[in-house]
Length: 146
Image (cartoon, rainbow, N blue to C red):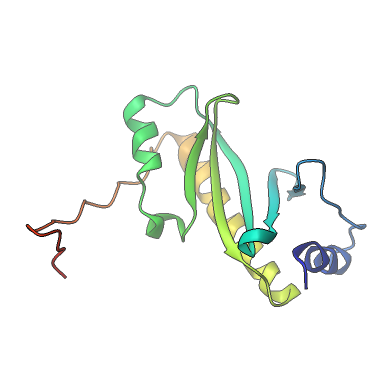
């Protein structure tokens, strides 16, 4: 099943009308009146990208911006940060494979929303970005000890 069909199944389940991709190949939905998530399917990769603006990037120091971009994926449940320099926004995004069911899509959206809320609130409070994971020690010959 294509992503847009699965998304429309979920939309019908929660009482929304039919949703369609826009000219850029994305659809943006507003959750809880505060969190706009854009969904961009990529048929060539059998993937869907979720993304949401979570903070104003213009107020970030260079070191905070760098720390966000280097953040461990474990701190964000597999999502990543990026900075849109034109919009001056911090973006939280995540790549997903295809969704086998409406329930799987709903679960992914809810988990992503949890990360959005967490990081939006954390950055708004000024708690700063997560600490980056330490770089692994590389031995001569390019081996990383495990």
